Length: 311
Image 1 (cartoon, one colour):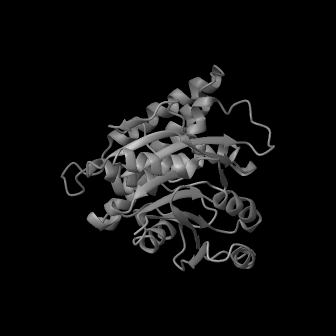
Image 2 (image 1 turned 180 degrees about the horizontal axis):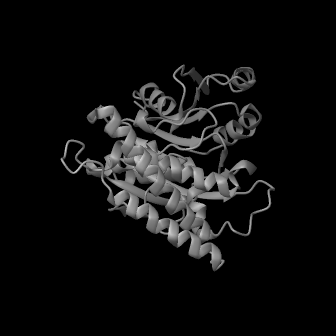
Image 3 (image 1 turned 60 degrees about the vertical axis):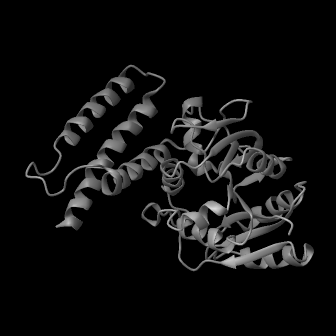
């Protein structure tokens, strides 16, 4: 039988973006048959009406599923379960536009390299918003930008992760490893800040020794909303990341006689001092340093939550 692709997107309250997004998804040229799989995560706007209109325009090419559990981790796991009978699944986000050749490039690497996963380039598009002067290139990765150069390569360590904003999977890996799913402890609900479930997925794929590639010819443009172009967004993002790290990932013995890991307070104090110095000296990396501080504060609170639950 011919191989089949589920080109998937999870969406929440972005009905105004769906026509251009789905038109671009369905305009991809690919040698394999594919569907557009839309996971509606309880949108309260006009999403279902827009999708109904698009489904009538593209009869038989769009499949819409509503996931009632709120949050991106639940929605992405629902996409996996809905696409298990497909040979491949390609993920993008609902605030993106796939560029020409994305689908064909993804399938080429998956098949020619016998890869389990391939991730592509993500270009931040400011969508007409003025880029703040403090938003230096080293911070673009926190807006999901990915650019590891112009050559395809196999990923062998965690220094070049790939994200669900532009990734393709061989669905056999989810059948082989039924526990390989997005971690709901790192769920992000609605328009909230945070997440990290795709970073955990990447870590788990590395743990299972799956073959992961980077393909520069897979390109999406990620359109950044203006509320993300605020310093407080970056600080809060790292505060939440710190909380989740301290709560779910940090390797400390909760039952040890040493009690709460006091070194976390020393670390936070050190990061605070570095942040003050960076601000006073007007160093260009002061935002990055402040993010380190909020992450350390979040880690302390996350450890507190973890230990309180353990008691």
